Length: 255
Image (tube, rainbow, N blue to C red; front, side, top):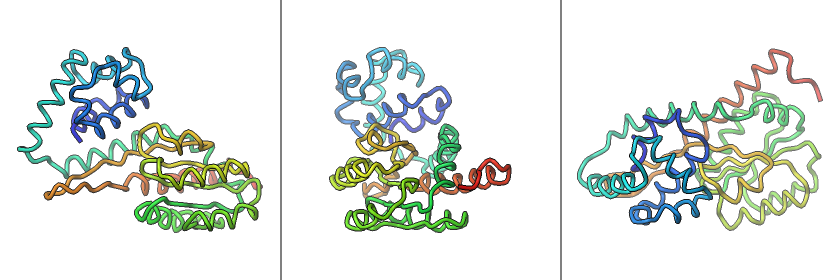
């Protein structure tokens, strides 16, 4: 991703809106090289001033300077190899920085009150995250169930208690099946968390609480892109530790 180095160097200056703008640009590089600031602001639900401040935080003189950088870097990237190990290390560091913004008191309270915690991933990699999260969360002695498709979600919805919760794990938050799932959860008034990458998306908008994680793309030698899910796993590992800390302090009362 072309902005990674700039983002890494200036991460502490950026807020959630800035990160969403950066994600949009990274996934629309070709269009953004010639995109007017008004268009980018509209596409990212921001103002012209917000876009300008974003480019200044990254060390540019303004939006025009930023676009020149995009044009130059996209040409250079075809010739210069990236230091993928350093990028990977920085991704891990950024992941922990962003996870500090999550309301763990809310999440751990909901888990403590629930009789059953349901996990659902929208694809193979996301389902792997759900299965690993099940292994992690079983240590808190709760009923943790991984759901594999919409049919299974329908089967359990009428059997869940009002305090049961759902974690919906997605990369983009924009798949067709998510519309059916979120509609069903909202219709039954079920509390659910979304876990998606750093951008505005339909799933995050509909969730009772959204958890954003950083999922950078590593480009292989043949041009194939590989999306990292390490930050999803780190979130659940962190969640377990936060739950245990609150339990040891006596902050999680019995249901």
